[in-house]
Length: 189
Image (cartoon, rainbow, N blue to C red; front, side):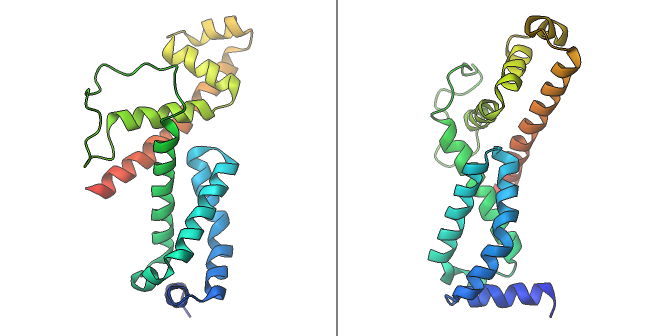
């Protein structure tokens, strides 16, 4: 039996409330989805919580799966939306060090627009706060204070190469957040 046929069979069984089908999906996808989510939020515990919630909702709403042709795509789409929801909701309470840009409209997001500049900034702020202490400090000194790598190295008494590595990793982490936001935006078009 082909993988697609097997997935469809499992999806149909799951839609009928088959616990063994749920166990199969859970065992197969839990680690994959956890790693996928962790790649965006860089937090093991929160990633696990999000995936547990995802599977709880999957079981509660299992009857809706009868029309799903591609379980893999469906689960990753749910995971992507869960990450965006997590970043959006978590960021509302996390940040005080960055001032709001003057370019953000006073009315913020309208009801029809889930993706706006304010949410993007919040997601970026959240990701910065999740960085290890030294990386966060170096990133802020570089990007917010405008210090050169050499100036940061002198202030912190560490090598310039260490500074470059921390900034490179920080930017890579932020690109992941931007990537998921772009994917969400494209999916809304």
